[in-house]
Length: 261
Ligand code: GTP
Picture 1 (cartoon, rainbow, N blue to C red):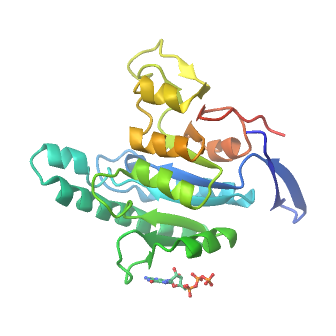
Picture 2: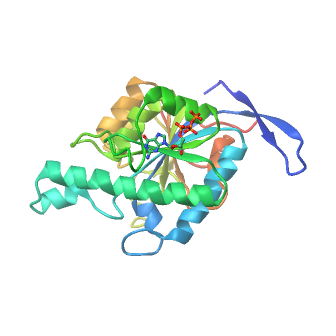
Picture 3: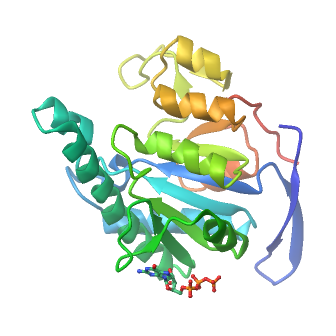
């Protein structure tokens, strides 16, 4: 990406600093698995606080951040349907799991003084706002973190696809996919010590080689809307800020590694 955005942030002594950052608005995709921390199942509140602080640091740069979080730490729809549960019922159960995670993440964000909102794709207005695109954009412009919950509201779509869809709708400059490893490899780096990391890939590389980054619907949607996917390890403190500043520490799909300016 050649474009950069001059964003204002405040230094610790209150001075306004203008930084040229590669992204003005991003959609951050967190996996449900990521927020279970070291637990077998569910939510690790301490890890959520860590994530909330990382997100706050990103927000302090002046970048607008929307989030989609998965639900796999609570319920995996596809696995349940493979084990005999009706696919549609399983997918709706998975969507509800994302609402639970979103509520927990919003709570953690509020605790570190980040203003946050949730919008759900399935109407449950006693719990959260419904998804309204104009209102979503307004929240982001006002510096609030916005969490999109309940997937797309439709079965057969993953939360990766939700992230690609919402990224396009809010006109995000990039889709940030947080993972446990620091980018995309040609084989599993946990199992294969010789696995090679890619710095940049095209969307077609991912689709053709069936690289396990995001499902093909999400990659295709990002390709059609020309939204780069940035894969990085969010478990390392400071990585979100580094990637927001354009440090080349992950893998960029459909775009170029950005160099800090
Ligand atoms: P502005 O219009 O920019 O001031 O946004 P706002 O979200 O601060 O104002 P609003 O009056 O829309 O919402 C006030 C609070 O109510 C916020 O915490 C919203 O998230 C929440 N809220 C708004 N609509 C709904 C809803 O349909 N259901 C639920 N549960 N909360 C809502």
